[in-house]
Every structure is written in structure tokens, then in C-alpha cells.
Length: 157
Ligand SMILES: [Zn+2]
Image 1 (cartoon, rainbow, N blue to C red):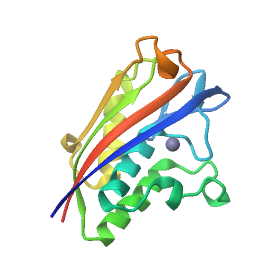
Image 2: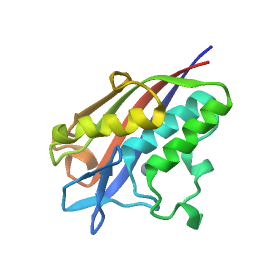
Image 3: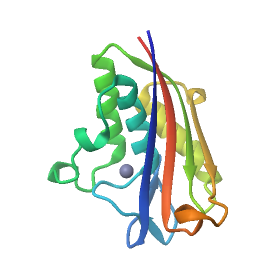
């Protein structure tokens, strides 16, 4: 059996917060505002897996009013979601994701992000694609006010 899921996540960029993407600390003056570490990439991937399982979204599984998830590492949230998929007898085949961020350049960080994600998902490095784009100076991403990410995940039994 094959299952496909899509995920989407956005966080406002604010001063005094680390910018976490794919479990990597990106050097920047601002970071994602949020209850957890606000890792938009990992949240999009977790949502895509939950979508493939028809299990709602991360807001249901990790409520932002639950102190347990305050400043939680999103790699841990993702690993909980992967565990849920395994419970259903499903394994990740591949992930394709895009980060939308105006600055800084993410290319130097992408390899480490793919490494973190493939480790948690239990797949080869070559099964995790992470792309980075800017908002071309348009909309909230383009104006440097937000970071967002999209992901598609394929699972098989
Ligand atoms: Zn998020």
C-alpha cells in the first residue's frame, strides 16, 4: 500500500529567537516565533506524514498550550510522528521539501538538514530532498517577516 501526504508551515520571524530549520541552527539575527523551536521545515514534514496517515496535524498531536512541548525540539516531534507511522505498518519512501526564506542563503546548511531528517525517518540521505527559495521581495516571506516550508511525503507498507 502507498500513501501520500502534503504539509505546509509558516512562522513569523522575530528577534531573540534562534532560526531552526531541519534541526540545524541557521546563523541569523531573527528566528521563528512559536511554542516549540518553530522549525517550519520539520513541522511541514511531520504534517505531511500525519496527512498520509489521515491523522490530522501536529496541532492536534502536540497542542501549543501543552507545557510538555514548550521549546520542544522538533526532531523529537518528528520522531514521534514516524513512530506513529510505524505503528500503522508504514515506512517513509521519500520526502521532497521546499523552504521559503528571503535571507540568509541556506545552501551551506542543506546537507546537514537532509542528514538530520533522513536519520529520524530511517531512510537513505538520497531519499530526502530539501530545496530553498526566496520570496523575490514579495509577500511576508519576501519582506523577511516569515519563514515557511512545504513538504510532500510518500509512505509504503
Ligand atoms: Zn510550525
